[in-house]
Length: 321
Image 1: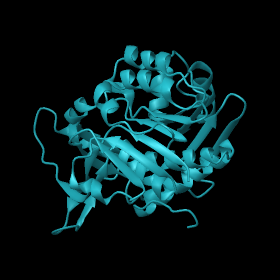
Image 2: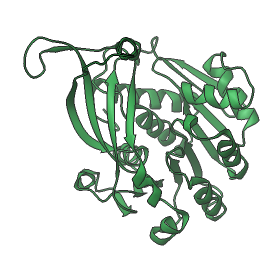
Image 3: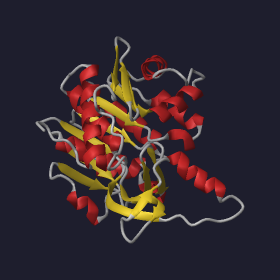
């Protein structure tokens, strides 16, 4: 059985819909369907005030690390998970996951819309994720896959990466999820690119993250996904880059490019049940396929398949389904 080490965050996610028109009690309402419609409502309140109702949908495991770990375990991997996991909700994780906690989790209030989500996070518990704390709980490093998630919220991630990468097996895959780096300085991000050194590194991005990095590198941000993936792969230290959005995905490894139109392949979900965690499920599908040495196009297909199923049903697709 292949194994992975995943770290280093952990959140409790409270999922909400934003009420547009209420007709009765409970779920008898029309929701605000788009982020732009929500933005317009907020803009109209400028200089005045407004009442916005949030309807609680679900409370569940959150954080890039735990969600990715659960999806990898569902796809057959044994996972060592390091993160801020001191909460009963993490007891529901797969028994294939061995947990190593660094403290209490953060909290995310996720406002979900048909075209995306707004994540309102309380991230102070991530201050406990330090290089010394991680090293104290670190298990054996004999894994096939290492996943460094939520770089943005873990301020000391550069120190952790710099310490751990030289110790990892040279034939292992190393995956990095920046998790919306816009609020970190360009200098921090460029420093990360300088210290991220390993023979088999994969960077996974959504479109917004890719555009942000391209702007820092002074490259074209209006290109198609395939061109964006290829450009980033050429100008960053990663051997492989993949990018996804709700409608398509692309990957490049310097030797070949791959692209999937999610609408043509029936992966696009017009009315999602949930969107929070979709990217982590895409990452799990992609990485599982690459561990099996499948092609870029097959990895993209597997990632989109798992992500689409999750968005449609709220559940992770198991092998054979």
